[in-house]
Image (cartoon, rainbow, N blue to C red; front, side):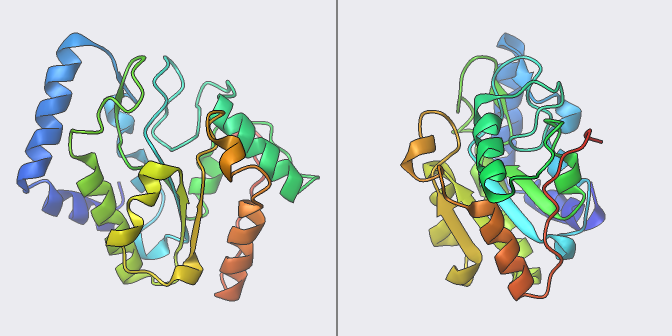
Length: 221
C-alpha cells in the first residue's frame, strides 16, 4: 500500500467497526475460504497515492468463485473472463472498436490512477455479498471521502445499488459522478448496457485537463 492510503487504514483501524471486520474475517475463515487472498485485500491501494487517484470505479464485492478475485474490483488474475468482466469488455468494444482486450488482469488500469474498489473487500466462497454486515462499507466510504477531499476532480463511477448507496455520504460535484447498474448479467440491461461510461470517464478527465485512461489490456502486468 502507498503511504497516504496506509495513513487512512491506520486511522480507521483504531475504530470499533474495524474490530468487527477483523472478527468477522477470523470467524468466517474458520469455516470456509475467503476471497481474495489476505495479501490481496488492500491491493487497490498499491499503485498510486491518494492525491494521484483519477478515477474510482466502485462495485459490490469480490468474485466468490475459486481463482477469480485478485484484489482489484472486476479484475481476474487467472485470465478467465467472469460474466461481469465480459459485459465490461462488451461496452469497451462499443466505445472503442479497435481496443485490445487480451487480458482479464486490470492492473494496467490501476497503474494509471484507477481505483478499482468494491464496497465490501472480502467474500466467502460461493456466497455473494456474504460479508456485507462486517463493516467494510465504513472503511471504503472513508477512503472515497478522503480521495475526494484531496482531489475534488476525481471521477466517481458507482456501479449497482450497493455502490450507489454511498452517494449521499460523499460530498462531490455531481458532474464528476457516473452512476449506472452493475455489469453483472442480472443487472446489465438495467443501465450498464450501452451506457458509454468508458468514453464518458475520459471525456470528464479531459475536461479537468487530466490524461485520459488507456483502456487497452495487452497482456496484464
